[in-house]
Image (cartoon, rainbow, N blue to C red; front, side, top):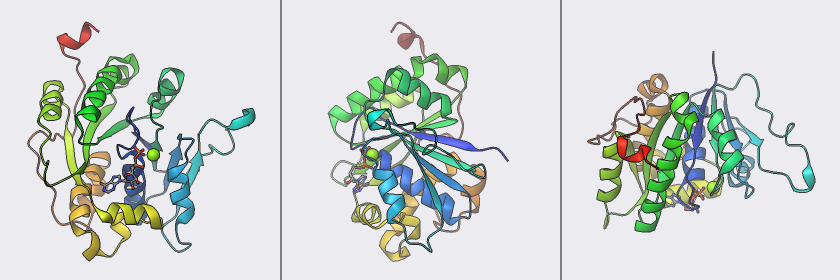
Length: 249
Ligand SMILES: Nc1ncnc2c1ncn2[C@@H]1O[C@H](COP(=O)(O)OP(=O)(O)O)[C@@H](O)[C@H]1O
Ligand SMILES: [Mg+2]
């Protein structure tokens, strides 16, 4: 069986890359799927989360792909066990140039979490435009989707973002609420699917469309969340075509 690689990326820090990476990995691992997180961020938050996991928790392998100080070789720490079925790649903020090319070369699908501020939405729109213009994403037909993260009930809709995504025919997979469950999971080395169901049922329901999009077969088997949030523009698969107005850039 082939390995599927999911790149979680946004040019902005604090958008939820590590949150999506760790929860997606724990969802797959909890379903008995061999899962590796590859952390490209020098801050190493995903790897720190892997190290926090209890010995009896479903195993997630951590691979360190961050640039090493003092020119140490990355190759050993970057090792991905051959049995891995899902590789989730946590990107650093601001990846560009050769590093961005390396990340894109590894990705079968790309998830872009975005925080609800106008500044984040604007920066993310520019980032998505740059990604779509990168020949590699189009040439490899990489799937790409967006996740709205840290959504507050006072600001439930992202109209400018939704209009932008709609114009590119890109799916907004789900909205993750700003919730203590995500904070607690990050601090304790678990995923929301591994927490007490009573503490995280809304968050599980919100997160499941991400897992289903990445792995439709596993998603349909998931017993951990009964209902998938329906969103108007969510599409299970798409081919990226760059509209005329973007080709000018
Ligand atoms: N939906 C959420 N609800 C509550 N806290 C969140 C949520 N998403 C992220 N956070 C918290 O916000 C901070 C930044 O999120 P993180 O996933 O580390 O972003 P990034 O990896 O993009 O820098 C972390 O402390 C994380 O636990
Ligand atoms: Mg991070």
